[in-house]
Each structure stands twice: as C-alpha cells, then as structure tokens.
Image 1 (tube, rainbow, N blue to C red):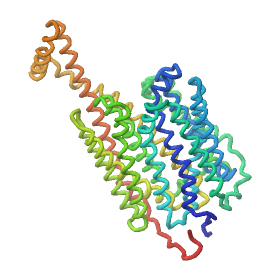
Image 2 (cartoon, helix red, strand yellow; image 1 turned 45 degrees about the horizontal axis):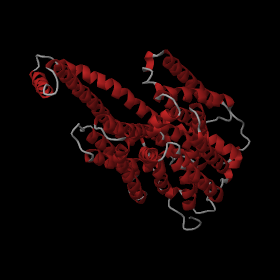
Image 3 (tube, helix red, strand yellow; image 1 turned 90 degrees about the vertical axis):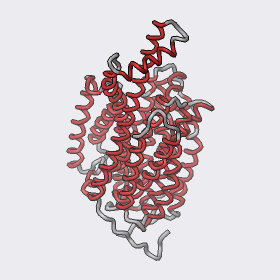
Image 4 (cartoon, rainbow, N blue to C red; image 1 turned 120 degrees about the vertical axis):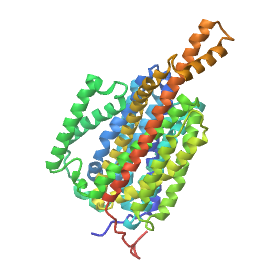
Length: 518
C-alpha cells in the first residue's frame, strides 16, 4: 500500500504541531521550581503543593496509551485541536486558581489535554513526512521533547522571581491559541482513519489501565515521602497496580476492539526501543532533578542561577539536533546511537567527579556533553523504534512510546530522591566513625575550630560550636557522596544501553520517488 501524503507541506505541519508539543512538554517541568511560591500563596504546605505535580502526571499517564484509539475513533485532527483547547483552558484556570483544590483540578484537566497531545503530534509528523525523511521529522520533534523539559526550570524560576507563579500558566494562552489556528489550517486526517471510526469503547480496558497507571504514578511520586514499602498504603497500591496490569494485558489481548493495540510489541525494534527510551528518560529527568539540588543545597546557588547552569544542556541539544538531522540517511542509526549512549555515560561520569570546590564551569561542560548525547540518541532511536510499523499503527505506538518516556522520567526522579536521602545516611554512618578523639585528623580539625571560635565566646560554647561545625562538614560530605553515587550509577545505566543496540534491526532506507513528494 502506498503511503498517504498530506495536502500541505510537511514543514508547515511540523511548525503547527510543534507549537503544541513544546507548550505541553515545557509545562511538565516549569511548575517544579515555583512550588514553594504556590504553597505560600494558596496557604498550603510544600507536601500538599506537590499534588500540583502528581495530579498532572497521573492524568497524563492514563491518557497516553489511549492516544491511538482516540485518534482512530474521532480523527487525529479533531483530537489534537480538542486537546490544545482543553490544555489552554486548563492553563487559564491554573492561573486563576483561588485555592489548592481548584489548582489540582485544573492540573488534572491539563494532564488529560496534554496526555494525548504529544503522541498525536508525533504520529501526525511521522505520517506527514515520507519514510525517507522520518529521521528529519524526528529531529524537529526532538526540539520540543528534549529541549523543553531542560529549559522549564530556568524559565519557571525567571517568571516566578520577576512576576508571579500564575504567569507560568498564563504564557500558554497565546501559544495555545496560535497552535489551534495552525492545526485547524494545516492538519488533516489520513483516509485510513475512517476505517476504525465505528470501534466500540473498551470500558473495561480503560478502567484497568487507569487504576494501574494511576496507582503506579502515585507510588513513584510519593513513595520516598511515605518510606516506600514501610507504609501500608504503598504496599496496597503496588499490589493493585500489579494485579490490574496483568488483568489489562490479558483483557487487551482477547478483546475484539482493544483500547491499546499490544500487537506492536511483536516488532523487535519497537520493544527494544521503548526499553531504551525508558532508560534515556530516567537519566535525563533524574539528572535534571539532581543538578539543581546539588547547586542549591550544597553549593548555595539561588534557584535562578542553578537554572542558568542547566541551560547550556538545552542549547547544546537544540543545535546538535540540527546536526543529527543532517546526518540522518548518511550515517547508520546504530552508529549514532553508540555515539549518543557513550557521550551520555561520559557526561554522567564527569558529573560523578564533582566536589564542593568546583566552579560553575565544572557543571556546564558535562551539561553540554549531555545535551549533544541526548540529540544523538533521541532522533535515531525514535526513527528505528517506529521503522517496522505501518502508518495505521503509528498513533497507537506513539502513545505507548511517550508513556514509557514519562514513566522512565518518573522512575528517574523517584530514584534520585530515594538514593539521595538514603545514600546520605549510609555515607554518614560510615564517616561518623572517624569523629572520635582517637582519630588524629579529627583532633587536629577540632582543635583548630575551637581555637578560632574561642576568640568570640567562652571555651564551653566554643567547644560545642566546634563539634557542631564538624558535624555540619560531615553531613555536607555525606550528601556530596550521595550525589556522586547517583551520577556514577546513571553512567553505568547509559553504558548498559550499548549491548541492547545489537538487538535493533537495521532499517532499509527507502529511496524517495522523483514525483509526488514534498
């Protein structure tokens, strides 16, 4: 069957859908840095305010796998425009929120609108470009998916410091209106969409999927705060999530019109690709969460300045993606992936050499390498993952692919928060054995501290303050080693992706036809 071609230029279509994609992906990270301001403004605790993030992630995760069914049932264009309108309306409601429950409800609506927006945009772009230019299409798509979450904290910090947290939501309004107008003008449904317009709604599949993903996302987001499986509700949620996951798989494989077509996992490239994307997302989101924490808690950077230290990664990813787009079709995809995962490991190992005497440049260089690495991975990986699928399968596959990206990001952030807290305790318990009068180095440092402090207070107080200062140094060093361990483990995770590249099958590059192409 010959591939369908849209009436408008695929470059115009790319511009239209990327406006929506960038807006949605940016919103997943832009609110993080404003949480303390949101909590104070709405008379809520910081822990209560984190539901602003959790509510968005839960509703987003539930909608993502439904994308293929929604696009086939209602049409891609109608779903995309409806999602943009809902997201834009919910953004206005977020900005106007008068209390925390209103804001959480608005974020749920945002998550529903944003959940289907990105995979629908991805499938539209893949359909609009000829097979020979899908790599170029994914290079454009990477600009939003890769760069936006990196720029989010910086932009969010700047807006919050200079205006108010409400403007991190209000800025979506002009972008959303422009995206609706562009989508209405250039996006069209391919003819095969009409074949599934009469498909019935899989209510049982939807219910099982919603419970499974909702409970899993809440566990990942709130697990460390609740001491993981030391808390009964986490155990119950984990059990419910596992049981409904198994039931969902069994149901979807036997029902006539499944909500999610799991047959795409028969294609080796898709199965391997989603696993690699999950690993990449865990490293990307985990590093994005960890570097600002290191700079603010240990180095004393203000929030906005720590965001600036992250911005070189977004800049590097932006420009590297153009280079990758030009290499597509000239350099084997697997070779590009080897370069990408190797650079990703190198950047993580560079960050594992950080100490408390480093300057900002010691964070900027690994961030630049990291940005280049992500570009060399995202474009060829997405192209290879979708390479064995027909156009009719792209909507469903894009939803599953983006779901694994989101889940990988949640796993990465949960890993960081857990390992930082527990790793610091482990290192502190190991190092505290040296804080004894029998350790020569400790006696020397304690004496020097007492000698300095006794000039300003009495000997007893000076001794107490000297012990407190020594413990403060110990605590700081313990947290530093926890950060170092995490960066090192991210490097190992990146290297673990290299053997999996051997499982990816080569793509036969189609030769573009001389007539009828864009």
